Length: 294
Ligand SMILES: Nc1ncnc2c1ncn2[C@@H]1O[C@H](COP(=O)(O)OP(=O)(O)O)[C@@H](O)[C@H]1O
Ligand SMILES: [Mg+2]
Image (cartoon, rainbow, N blue to C red; front, side, top):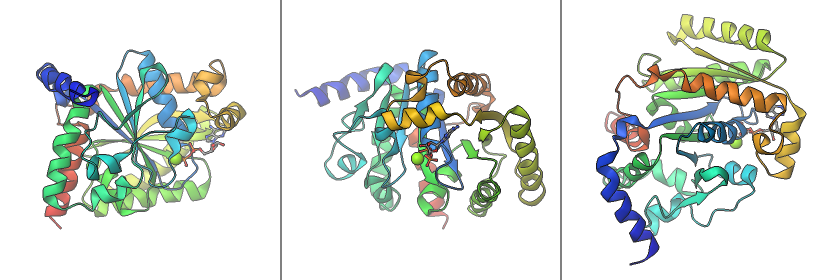
């Protein structure tokens, strides 16, 4: 028996011990690119891991492959291999520091959402294995303009929406929410956390939250949850250049402390689940339902 099928058997035998409803799935997104999604995904994963959670990051940003660059680790396989080379989800996991694992979407991401319903059902059964392995799955998406990203955002029940104080970033975040709403997503069936990155401080973060929430409540009937802010910090830029997560390289920097706080805020806010089915297999079931209703 090869190592992969060994692993699959271990997972199968353990499946009864885990309730897939307990897995928490956080979809990280933004209207505009370059606002910090991938760095947030990686540094949050590290802080969740420090608190004993089993974490998997799913890099769903087609073409940019951000997570592997921030970790400085090249994956052997991607989602493409799961779809076309009959690999399981555990075969395509890439190990990262602290016992975090990540999945590189690669070109498989676009394929995934354009699969036939039968194929998608088969993928959902494969993705179920991941829900049994992780406590938290973080999905790093591209900017919220493509159909694929909007599918992910609409189908998730917890979203971490990132904006910076720049007006274009705020209006693009609003446009993402509007597009999500047009696809049938609402803030009643999901929690939408707003994170203000590169803020000068708590006041500016709060001010931007209030501004955006006012218009989303009024025009989209969407209530945002203020999850906090991250400061602009040069150590993050340095860490990106060194291809190491900033919380590993500069654990005492302002931004590393802010990441700790952000992780605490998210973990303290457990009302997201309310026994709703979650996890990545559920996310794709939702995408399938959205396709059926089209
Ligand atoms: N809080 C911050 N302080 C300083 N620079 C930042 C901060 N957040 C993001 N950056 C800069 O923005 C770049 C893009 O971040 P990244 O996480 O790759 O964004 P995205 O995934 O949204 O495209 C980083 O490489 C870094 O230079
Ligand atoms: Mg990115």
